[in-house]
Image 1 (cartoon, helix red, strand yellow):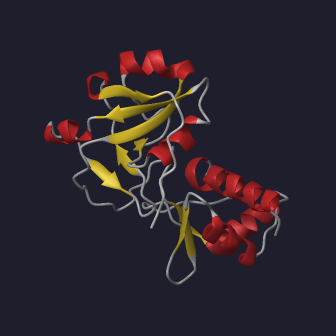
Image 2: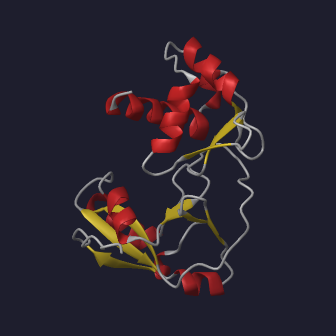
Length: 193
């Protein structure tokens, strides 16, 4: 499968498994899982048929690991990013002292006044990695900006945090008092050893 087809399928899966399962005739369970065969049937009915092998390839190769397939291979779900109510079954965890949020200059003033909100999703998404925050910022309007979230202080004030299997940190709205501008420039890539 070529990269463009893989990207196209990934976008379609994200739309269905995060926001509009009914488009493919799906009903998500309480944890966001859908039946794989029902998904394949629904995609075919939408005129976008994919094979089980293509589905597994998209899940395995998605750079952000947005999707999970159950151990028995019969169910699939998005790991986070839902606008439909789901309970991902994550246990609250203590976050690092600082987490990051990538955004754009076009919305920076509003965020610094109003704080971070889920914006139609069930959680605010944060990162421990400057590179991941930078990737998110590239999609936002205006020049990329990385915000620091004083997660340690926020957690001490009673706010819960969850970490998904693919490393995304989830929390509720973040008041402006816990935010500061970290960078308006691309982070230097880290070297892994």
